Length: 461
Image 1 (cartoon, helix red, strand yellow):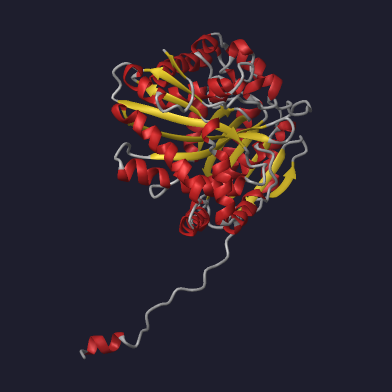
Image 2 (cartoon, helix red, strand yellow):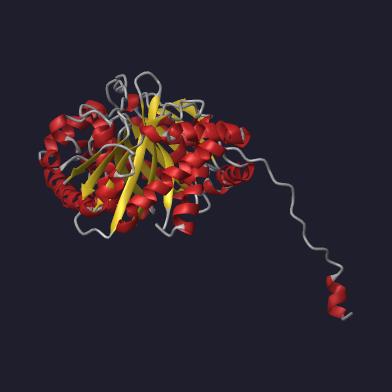
């Protein structure tokens, strides 16, 4: 043995330590004197701090003739204030190394800020300024409206977006806001102006119905004093959040083909509504849906992608839509993907057979174990950043869930058995309650799909 090798034997190979228990962080809840609700989470080492502001300005509060005004308002919040022009405001954010963005969805408007901890004081001041004193300059609103009008044709040309629009229109009654595009149509967006944006802001944006989530390393920061001196300066009248509408849907089995003559691929979106996170079955439903179509090794992918070569990938999912007036809510349970035009019929037939086989034989213990490992085991990596934690906490606020919900969900996922997961996914995707939207060449795909007998078929332009 050489002298080098002998020396190396004196240093035993390092051994891994015992894994530390992990749980999704529980936030601390508080409030500012102006009525704004606070959720904070100190995460040592995460020196980029994330702030999520949840504004109770839901899409169903938009005037019917001005749908899209919530989106324009959200985009305008960083387009200048009474104290800074748009250029000055952007420059101030850049000097902080901060990013500020906002978007509108069915539950309300979300404003997101990320900034290094060393610049948090300045960035929070700018965020507070945007919330309490937005300029909504006529020139900026016109530009944002023009940009939004330019986006709409591109969205209509996108098969996946077009399929989603058609599915929501099919599932939900015309008087429900969720039946129509989130960011408005060309007709409604065209009528939005600065007074309309200002009126929507004044009617629905106030501290007493707002929640701010702040996550990161607060070492050396007097966070309560800083929040009071920034977001606490925002004033407004007190009001109750707008009541949420009851969500009803019609998932009677049927097929809608959105005709795209000459399309070489068919975009498919299969969906219905089902239980959301308020329902005790959610954990089992998440687990079963993951086994059906949540990864490359799921049942749908194994058949449609690996065995048949119909698609690059197909996914099953459960997406929360909106908590309803009675405290329950609706989730969109769906299957999405794209296939070559000539195999549209066979691909649907095989997908239906995968679901039948699952109902008849159930999931295997191995499938369940892999799903738990992928969903629960990787959670510490998923939540490494402050932004990921803040985003999830803000989701909980919007969905009216307890602060401990996410941590409890992982425990329920780990404890869910194969039989429970099988029952949940079979219940989520009953073949006689699925609405199918196909965006593709109707002349080629309509007849083969009609012959499958999965529901009456309608072709739309």
